[in-house]
Image 1 (cartoon, rainbow, N blue to C red):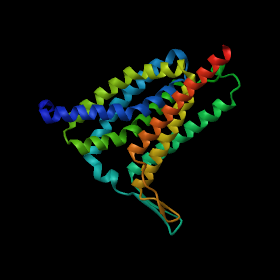
Image 2: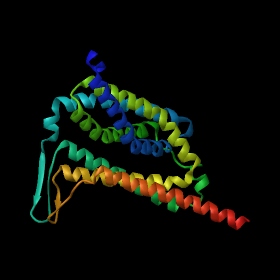
Image 3: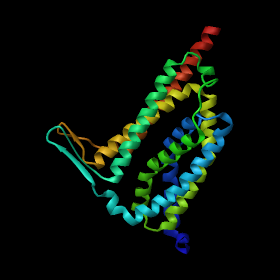
Image 4: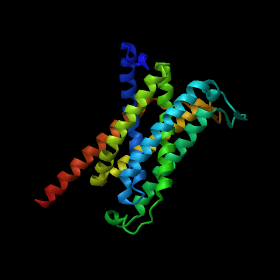
Length: 259
């Protein structure tokens, strides 16, 4: 524990906390959307408990990954259909593919739901709510999927367990603090809800491409490469910029029509 307070380890700790904060945005978005499925009185406690449990499971996962990183990256089954489909799947690739697929399914389902609902302002009144335990399970599970890459990145930066564990705890506490603010913003600015769902959709594409790359997947002879993080953040930046400009332009049009 004392090795945490050396200058190199403190610098690494700051880098890891920043990494947790950057990679935690899409996680917070999913948590905010998922928490809305339960009763309003339980949403805040769901977010806090979900992130709290995720912190504990992240620490356990960190310990397991450090002890068994070779076995987690070793393929445990392969598919070889010449010139059609092939891939060698390890634990990391499989979890990333499943997580990406589930996130894309969630995003598509919510987008189609918004298009089909006639009264968006009162869509939650009388609607059947998801159970607290079911939503909690999904939040914790998806939190672990989102955290897998950050754990591997942390291990690449340092081998000191306490440095990584401290970064996970601090990052988790920051997420607990930010979760209510993100949820409140989406509740008060419903116009940005569709933007959040499309960002979640892009996150799913990112995870699918990364999982396919980890599995050395080829479809009809074409190798699938992972979407780079710089491309991902550039796309998000453009989407947010377009949404903000479009919102401002719409407000300007409405104001001019009222005049």
